[in-house]
Length: 141
Image 1: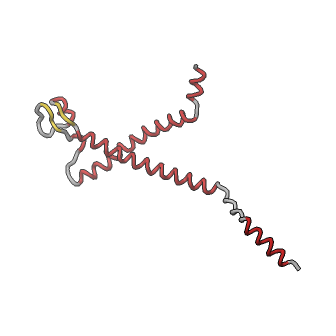
Image 2 (image 1 turned 180 degrees about the vertical axis):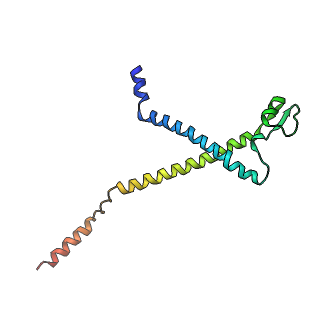
Image 3 (image 1 turned 180 degrees about the horizontal axis):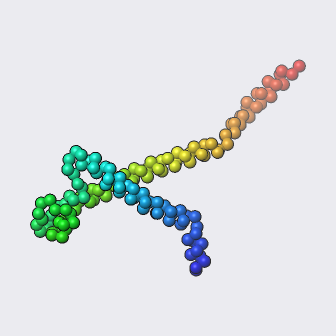
């Protein structure tokens, strides 16, 4: 059983999957920083929008202007701003991965086109072969 597990664990697919998960986690942090440090400030230029502190009080009372963390301590709140931020992160990650997959597919197609031998010329039909032979026989003296 231990030997079977070792064979499974060192197969290429499992190792590739582990590397993909690690790179995905790092990529997620990059996108999180992109959204939080670059995109959100640009959005905030057009208005004072801080998605992370947007919420609706469901039960209890909260002083206006409290952060989401403080509002959660004082009352029951529905923090939809965090969801908006995560949805933006997802959209950016999905678009970036779409571009990566599109680029990889383009490179694979280009490599396959370069590596593939040219197709053989189509075979001449039998009637054309026969007519060619007749022509050649008529040309003989």
